[in-house]
Amino acid sequence: MPPHATALVESLDPAAVLPGGELRIRGRQLAEVGVAPEVRITGSPAAVLVATPRLLVARVPDGAVSGPVEIGRAADLPQGPALEVGVLIAEHLHPVCNPAIDPEGNIFATLSGARGQKTPVSIYKLDGNFVLKSWSSAVMNPSGLAFDRSGTLFASSRHDGSVYRLSSNGAATLVAEGLGIATGIAFDAAGDLYVGDRSGTVFKIDSERNTFVFATLEPSVAAYHLAFGPDRHLYVSGPSTSSYDTIWRISPTGRVAPFFRGLGRPQGIAFDAGGSLYAVASYQGRRGVVRISPTGRAACVVSANNLVGLAFASRARGGNHPAALILATHNSLYSLAWPVPGQPLPPAAAA
Image 1 (tube, helix red, strand yellow):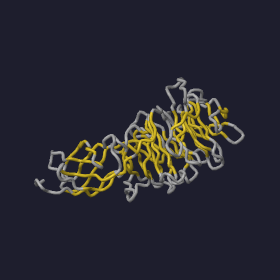
Image 2 (cartoon, rainbow, N blue to C red):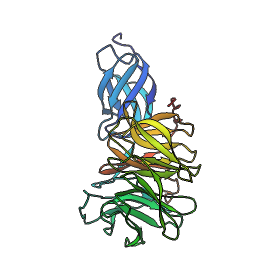
Image 3 (tube, rainbow, N blue to C red):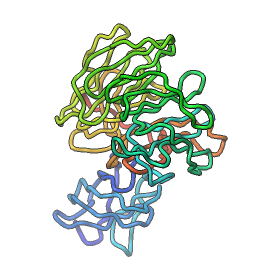
Image 4 (cartoon, rainbow, N blue to C red):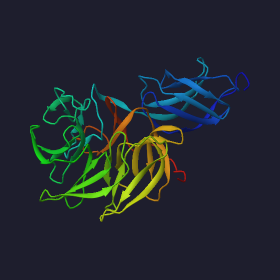
C-alpha cells in the first residue's frame, strides 16, 4: 500500500461484539501484505490478528465502547463505521443458562456453583438500574430459569433433579422431582412445563403436576437448553463432544427432528419477535451468537467468547433503557443494544 494511501472500511462483520471478540473488517487498502496497521475502536487500540489489503481481523480490547472503527497511522486515523460493543452490567456470577427477565424488566441470573456446592446466594436479581441484589439461596445448583404466564419464576436444580416455584421473596416450593440431571426449562402456550434431563430425556409436567417422558435425545456433556418457537414446537440445544452439534425441533406430540446442524457447543437459545432462533455457539470457526432463520439459514451476529446464555429485553425497562440483548458469560452479564442501531442484520448464509 502506498505510504499515504487512505484505508476504506466497507463493512464490519459482525457489527456487534463483546470485549475479547474477534471482528472482521472488510474494505480496500487496509494494509500492506504482512504489515498490520493500527486499528482503534472509539480510540482504544485493538490487536490485529490478520492483515491483508481487503481484510483485517482484530480482537476487541477490554474497555472498548461502542463507536467508530478507525484504520491508519496514529497521525491520521480515518473514521470508519460504528461498532456496537456490549456493556458489562454484572459480574462475579456463575450462569449456566439463559438469564430470565420478568414483566417489569428485572433480570435474574444464577450463581450455580459446582454440582453439590451450596452457595450463599444462588439466584441474583438485577433491577432496572442494573443494580445487582441477592435474591434467593433456596435452590442449590440452579440450572434453568423460566417465567410462567403469570410472571412467576421457576428454577430447575441439577443437584437434586427437581423443579421449584419461587415466590416474590425468593422462597422455593417443590413442583416436581425425579427429573435426573435437570437443566433447561420452558413453558408452552398452555402453561405446561418442560424440563431437560441432560442424560437424554425431556420431561413434560402438566398443570396437574403429572410428569411424562416427552422426548428422548442424545445425552449432553453440559446441559440442555429449551425454548418454544412461534410454531409451538420445542427447540433444544445440548453440547456434546462433537464440533458439529444439532439444534433439535420437537413437535407437540414429541416427534424429534433436526432443525439445524453444524454448531460447536451450542448452549442458550431464544427466539426474537420475527421468529429467528438465536443460539450461543461456535459456527464456521467463529464464536458468539448465531442467528438461524425459520428456514434454517445461519449467520454469526455477535462475536464473543465464553457465552452460555442470552435473553431479549424489551424497550419497556422502566423507560430508562433501549431494547437490548442480554448476554451471559460463564461469570458475567452484558447488555447489547439490539437491533444494532443503524445497522441491518447481516444476510444469513445457507446452512
